[in-house]
Image 1 (spheres, rainbow, N blue to C red):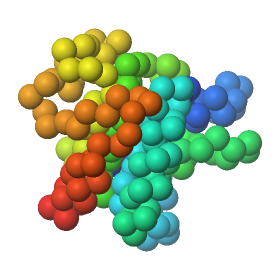
Image 2 (image 1 turned 90 degrees about the vertical axis):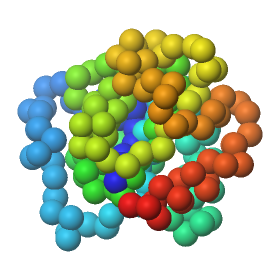
Image 3 (image 1 turned 135 degrees about the horizontal axis):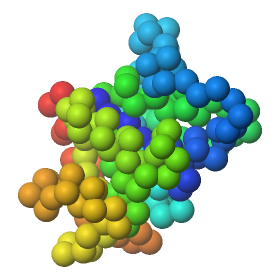
Image 4 (image 1 turned 30 degrees about the horizontal axis):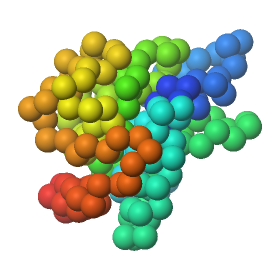
Length: 178
């Protein structure tokens, strides 16, 4: 069960842009609503807005065509994105990590792809890694390169290219196994 968004470019990044620095900050645990009180998404897409938004939207649409429910962070004035992202990440069945060049970078310390990645790995949530940088290249954040070694099964999808045909079956197979 996994989550989404990232720094100022992705799911979490959008959350970062919406936070009011003067407002009291709530911890993730405080933002959680009991699962029974809300709907559980099948998939949480974690991504950097500035690097993988187009691909995230295409993946969401393709997964929804298969009948899956997908959480993809969106920036809306007045939304409590910290709350929405925390709930979606905790409750999703699996996460898809669209690991672009700066994926895993710490941006605001509240919600970013670094926090999402660490949550997914520490809670052992099922996930599908989509590598959005060429093999042989490292992510900008060294922590990401350490956390996502080449030995982890991953699907290559470079930004601006068509979605790999095997990606949807990779996601559905992992969902079926979980």
